[in-house]
Length: 373
Image 1 (cartoon, rainbow, N blue to C red):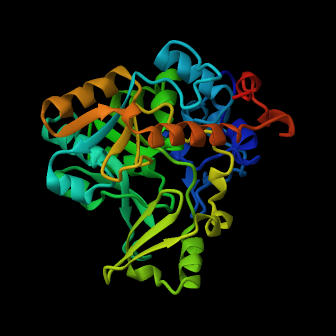
Image 2: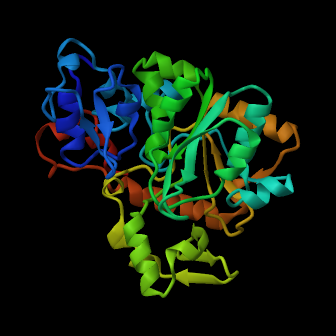
């Protein structure tokens, strides 16, 4: 990275709005002088330092810039390290080894998980076979009802199932690494949205060795955007739905809501768009392009998960759960709805790349050749 640190990261990523709020910089800061706000932004909390000043960085520490999945030429660098070559313009959802439709064979996991239950199966299998000691994921908060989520560390089957399912408010799952460090866990799986899944590439590419050794698997969740808690609460109230009565939400071109009384409602997704989280508005990555395995329920059948296997270790994990009889799989091409949506939504997200109207240092080297996608 050269002679750069928090000052450049703040001015080139946070200040111009390229920051997705993934919290990677906070997670890796060795001196804990970076914090995280309720609005999902990294901030300088070191005593006596200005918002874009870091005296630790002035002494030579640049680890926050190396962990950031949005700093300068991050995408091309990561592609070359993880996949051996940059992505081509027509690879709108990134490099893949194979694409499958997957479904958990265990009834409990399938029912408590989202769509096909793949993520829960992978985590439980990894824990029970001692491939990981824990997983960073998200859990429902106890104070703000069934919608809002927060980072969580799970270390057993019960914890995995308790945190299963999708939430559409943002949770910076990497922050749960602090708990993993406190418990001295050695091997961790990271489950996160596309912005967070890119950490899988930055720690490898830029030599963030502590976490390169610790993150044993990264599962990326297909994600076009998340919404604020307050915004969802308001839209639901406009439809006479109390947010505290909601037990499950899914989004498949419409906002799908299940309530405690057993009723089901569908709301127009466009009503939620004004409440899109700021960090999502410039994110170019729908398909979690740098995860080991990317997953999402965007197909015609809610009972299956569209699964993109991207890396050798992702392939090893998938082979493990399939060989164990925990997952059934079939080719992704058998669901043209899922494949078409994958291409369409990835293409839409790619259009969010910063262009020439972005000012000054925020125009990063190596970015412009990729914009054409």
